[in-house]
Picture (cartoon, rainbow, N blue to C red):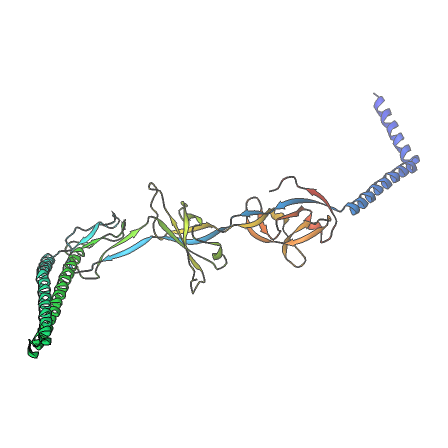
Length: 409
């Protein structure tokens, strides 16, 4: 039972002995250890000064990337026309309700013909009469030409007889007068023939006008689409210019947006564009128009994108808010971590790079766009050794101890 107290007393005595009588020995040992640590620290500092600051460098190569351009816009109908009457008359066709789908050439409004059929028959009769008079006019020309030939022969004979003294001067004069009379008859006959031709043309024009007037009685759809309004009801009297119906076409769908002066040069017709509607629905189309003239108020340029939804998809309505993401012309850039960006003493945005002599340098960059993997920047040329770790601790000309990152972004 007294063993443990005796052991405790011995340990206490040994501790006091070491503390009092062996203090100098312990201090010397501690001094040696401290000196060794100081020596190691000085050696590390000298090594650091000789090899430079440790940094991690990314060997970055330029790549061509596509530049997305986001444009706010709205949907609208590709075509929208108001069909109006070109003649007067009462509507005799049944009313078509708005929202109805029609094909190209379908009758929207049909008007009462009235006396137009009789007018057409009269015009055709006048044409037939004019054509019947044409042979008579041609025969008169032939007859007048024959009389001219006869008068010419008589004149020739009279002149020969007069040279031999067998005919008087009076006979010769009468023969010459006969020739002139016959020539006038030919001119008159030809004029009559021309008048007959003019009568035929006039009658033909009358027939065409009567037929065109009858065609105007039916107002047809110029293209396939959807009725935005009801058609004029039965019994409605339409005058020239009166409204029959409004027709719209949503196939393909058009999205209209406006782009700033800075981005307009990156767009051109034919570029692929993705459209996101306010409902979350997405469609794909292409740029069909880029304005050459800016809006005088907003200084923006109109951009049209046309899309062709599938037959089984829900139709796109006009006036919906849409976001256009067009793929602009490609540019060359480097993909770097966002943390690699820094500012120099002048406040310029850039990156620290490792130069050929293992010293640090600064290169200004321009941010092209962000991505999930990092940031795309331009201004580094085709290739660059970018410091991605330790760049905040170096300045221009600082010596570097470089460790290269094994894989890029």
